[in-house]
Image 1 (cartoon, helix red, strand yellow):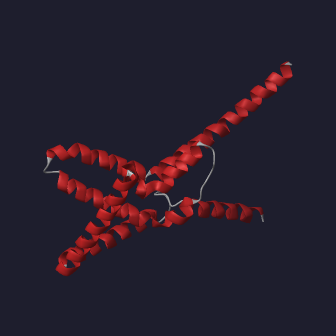
Image 2 (spheres, rainbow, N blue to C red):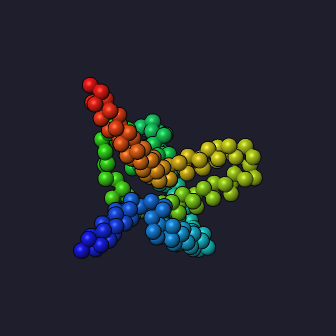
Image 3 (tube, rainbow, N blue to C red):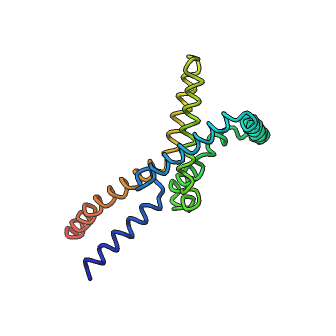
Length: 186
């Protein structure tokens, strides 16, 4: 009975871990690589078939112009850079003010693998364009660093919270012992 209970608790903890949608979760890297392969295949197919390529280019330009127009109209240039990880940035702000979890991961966590695959493709294309143009290296490197930080901010937040929790757990016995010692001396 007791052995089964521990196994159930461990399985429950594993399920909670899987729901975090982190790179270290089982199957996450495999899913991301699969998404990367599918996205590259779709891009190759679109590039190989001229009518599809022209339609994709026109659609891309139309979306880009609408987004840039909206950002310019509302003076939200910085918002464009945060769109890919807005849930995590908002979560960090909520954590900073001790508001707790907003639940963004439940909705947006499952789409992380295709988004990470797309970000990787975008960064590769960015560097492909920038490599022959030495003056583009610094801005491209800054974009890559920003993309990496935003892409992996859920993992950074997880590690930070885990370390903070471990530090709190380690400090608790010392604080309790100090409090007991102070109470005895009174």
